[in-house]
Image (cartoon, rainbow, N blue to C red):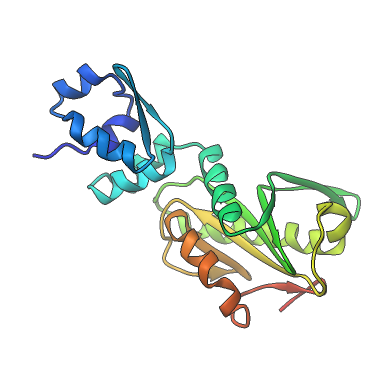
Length: 215
């Protein structure tokens, strides 16, 4: 049976001799190194991109709940920031602001022209009641985004184009089975890049906040 190398690495097997004893070849490790997921440093392996490595582990047979235990919320945030910057967004992570006498925090905010993406990172595994948790989180995130809309320029400290469009997004580890809820987009982390590629061409059908109101 072929070893799930990404899963072994994420579970803590990081010494070359330990991995070889488990049947992992150096060639397999070098393939992951070429992909930028790990770095081989002498007789040890250093994980560089935990989220991408977890996604690869799931593709090779690990269940999503197991994969979620290997990752932190910070891993998700870092990947979201990298994706936004790759697509030429200016990023603030996190963004803290005040509105209506209340304090708010949004994990990641990306600005490109008039487009403002507000991302809430959720490190959840698949289990009973997940759909309800997603809806609750989406409703709270929408409230934060509506409040941000009322103080946008002041809160961001970044130049935003005319007639800003705020898009609330919830990023999860797994595909939860629906694309939006409570006027918030819901996207699995491995689909984030595709969303960013296609978003501007689909703004007419994407839940958004314009002029401080839901559109």
